[in-house]
Length: 214
Length: 279
Image (cartoon, rainbow over all chains, first blue to last red; front, side, top):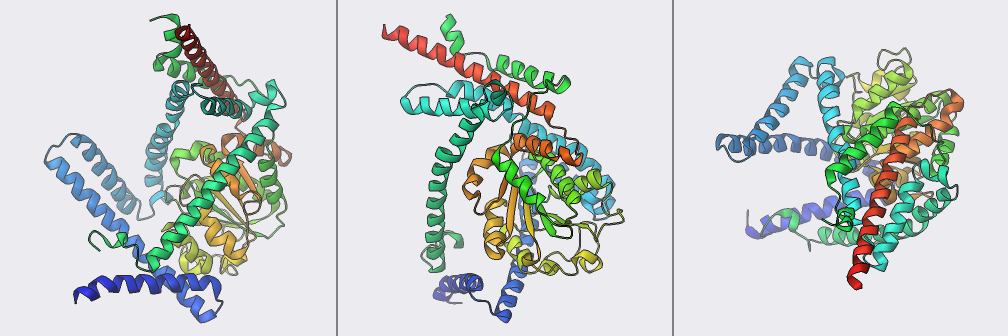
């Protein structure tokens, strides 16, 4: 395959695939819509194989760390045991039914769920400590942020409206007006950025997804 | 260290210990603070309330075990509400580790999942749908081809209620219990915008501000975090639903109060020190 072909073929495929899927949104032609439905199924199946590739890469990296006794190698060992232990439990002991099988569900419910929930719950402690350190009225803007944070924090918990009934409506106003206005602006900005990036990808101006040197 | 310095630099371990106590004590001995009502939770309730017997509703588990303590109460309450309204429930999930919570909610609310005599007639669990937003698009176009089997391995053709459900157009309501990506924006792009489907969501509190921008035009109702779920439980009391979130909300109240006390103390120390230096 020539260099020009190797360089341009992925761009042509991207353009055609992108335009076909976009067109499906605007044109209601049964055969065409069916073709896109099948195309999406194909993408779904193809992307699922990425899990296998990901597992292979993950295994290679951590086996290497383990064999070279690099710093933190015991974490790699724990990862490999958990990854393949649960895979074997689900596939062999769980007859391929994974969480639906009681053996796998036991480990899922009694190991994974409490561990993951605990890690997330610990955020409460770090956030409390960080809020105490970070919320200082150093400037006018920081003071506004501090006051809004305190009002929302107390107003969204039952104790706030129980102490002062107007705190609920004030909290709702902060969340619904200044907060939503700010986020809406950011959302619109991001959407425009994504749109322009999409157009650049379709037109072959943005080639980062093809890898280095494309 | 001076007193002012101490106010500004409290040992984090002291904060952790006090926080642990103010969270634990109300869980053991609840205070029973009244739970107020937010307009978004009321809207969420009202949307489910409008469901007529036989309407097909899709509920998606778009969260994992990390946010399970915050999201599962809303999942359970929503399933209970839909069951009370006589909806036909299609459960599924775009987070692989969130789908077991659908099964758990069916078992806890309806008494059983796949062994229930009404399984496949009044409710199904289609399990995990892979590949995020592309998976949502594929599901919306062709439900039967995207989910060929349910969570328990039963072919979708063997489930009577799935016979007439071909695409996103065949649903009356979409509910996503979400905490990240894929979540609300993906559902809005691939389902709400495509099929004009009424959509409501239950979210983790931290992700709620980003989704409020879609309320009420695209998202008709929002349950925001544990507080929203507690409010929803209060609304469901008329159906005899017994909530579990009053003690955790007491804990949340006291923990927020403690954080505010520390913020005030820190600022008092900061202001006095600054004023002192100025002098």
